[in-house]
Length: 214
Image (cartoon, rainbow, N blue to C red; front, side, top):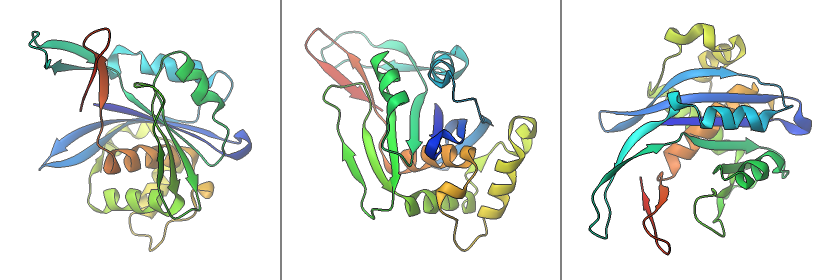
């Protein structure tokens, strides 16, 4: 299952985009780093939408109905996680308006995690997450050696992200996310989301009912 992480730095100074493939190994989530780069902010919504709809990042899932209808296979799009230090959700709103669900994560100095559920199913949730949680989750995954693919995809991984990950694994404390490469923050957004939230998707079983599966 693929996840796409996007991070926009304050004042739109940097934008990072990371794609990972999540898989299970020894009953734990592992993550293969597929690619990472810093796309231009202009046209970022189209860039995200193009990757969201790219068949290379879709997986097939068998869905079982609760109303005795036959099971069916559906295409599961990648999950989008967009993170920022700002309150501006312009790109997130534009994508949601185009019926592309986005899990939005605002990184704050508040020690509590808050979740705002959407008014309707399938658009994504809004999270406020303490900055320390990003660093703690990233470091935990690195130390447990559950992030792979770096050595195999060196040409697709920016040098700044390679250097950051090699230092972060043994660092006693990871710096405030504002100082990270934008791609590191995009990666951390994916890891925090998947490590701390049960992933679900929604499909419609009739004109009045929806069902969630994960």
